[in-house]
Length: 201
Ligand code: GRF
Image 1: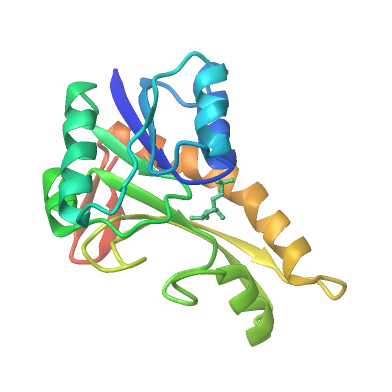
Image 2 (image 1 turned 60 degrees about the vertical axis):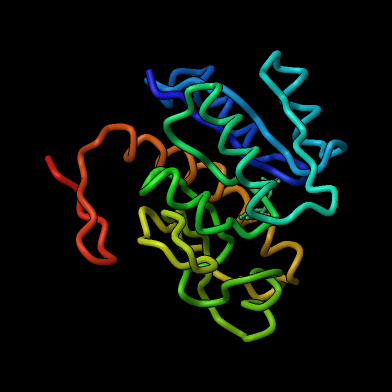
C-alpha cells in the first residue's frame, strides 16, 4: 500500500478528487496518510478533517523556508509517506525538501507545460489566445513547474469562453489526470530518462 501525503493551500478540489478515486477503487494500492497545509484555514484541510484523515496545519509563521519545509518533511516521514502530491500548494519547495523525496513529489499545473508556468496559468493561456491548453502532472524538481512530465490532458478553448469557464473545464480534466498520474507512478512501470517519462510494460 502506498502512502500519499497531500500538500495544499486552498479549496482542495484536487485532493477531494484523489480521495474519491481511492474510495471508489479507481485508484488502487493508495491511502492518504496525511493532508498538510501551510494555512490552518484552508478549506481543503477542513475537507480532509471531515473525511477523517490526518489534517495537519504547519504554518510558516515568518520562519525560514528551509526550516518550515524541514518540519513538513518530518511530518511526512512520521506518517510514512512515500509519495507527496502537491495539490494547489502555493509555496515553492526548498532544495532540501525536493532532495528528501527524489522523484517522489508530484504537482499538477493548469496548463500544458512548458507553456504558462507560474500563477494564473489559465488566464495567461486565455489572454495569449491559444486554442488548446490543458493540465500537466509532473515530477517536482528544484525549478518551478519544471520536472519531468508524467501526464497531460488537452482542453480546447471554445468561442464563448472567458478565463473562468476555461479554468472550470481544465479543472475537470485535472481531477481525472491527477489520479491517473498517481496510478502510473505507484505502478512503478516507468522510467524517467532525462526529462522523458517512459512507460514500461
Ligand atoms: C489547480 O488549478 C491546480 O492545477 C493548481 O492549483 C489549483 C488548485 O485547486 N496547482 P484545488 O485547490 O485543488 O481546487
